[in-house]
Amino acid sequence: ALPLCFIVSRLLMAIMYSESKLNASATNHKGSGATGLIQFMPETLKEFGITTAQLQNLNHVEQLDFVKEYLERVKKVRQTEFETLTELYLGVLYPKALEYKTNPDFVLYAKPTIQYLSNRGLDFNKDGKVTIRDIDKRMKKLYSTAYKTMLQPSPKGGKN
Image (cartoon, rainbow, N blue to C red; front, side, top):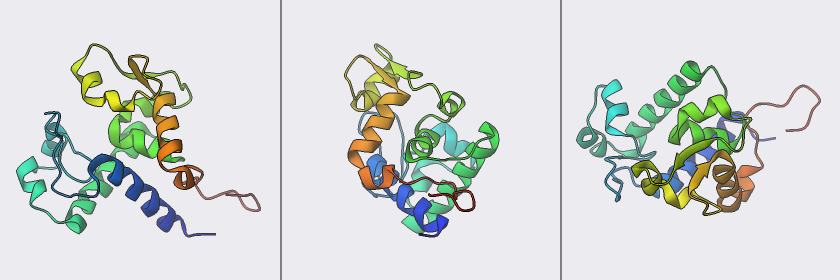
């Protein structure tokens, strides 16, 4: 079995590729202001005492410190662990959705909002809503190997 830190790194790489194609200085081309490896929103970066311009000037390794701190904050605030690739992606994209992770029909974004328009590529079934189910199906399609990986160590004697 692979060490948990390697598994998490692999899944996080899939998410960073999905968000920025691993470009540390990437900016959202739809105008949201999101920047960096996981497309931090400007408001989120303020919580870290950094601007989008400052983040863009950091290299990949330096940005990973912010990614790690951000994900740790999400887990603490939402009182949850990331158990799947979909949950890890929700932690990056829309942390509030983690409260509803057992409801695949929970809507993150819907037409005609600007948030939906900025994220309509995530609407897997093209019904005008981005749901947890859409995110899950997208992750499964794009990253089928990583998708099968659970982030939590299996119980003693169980399969991972």
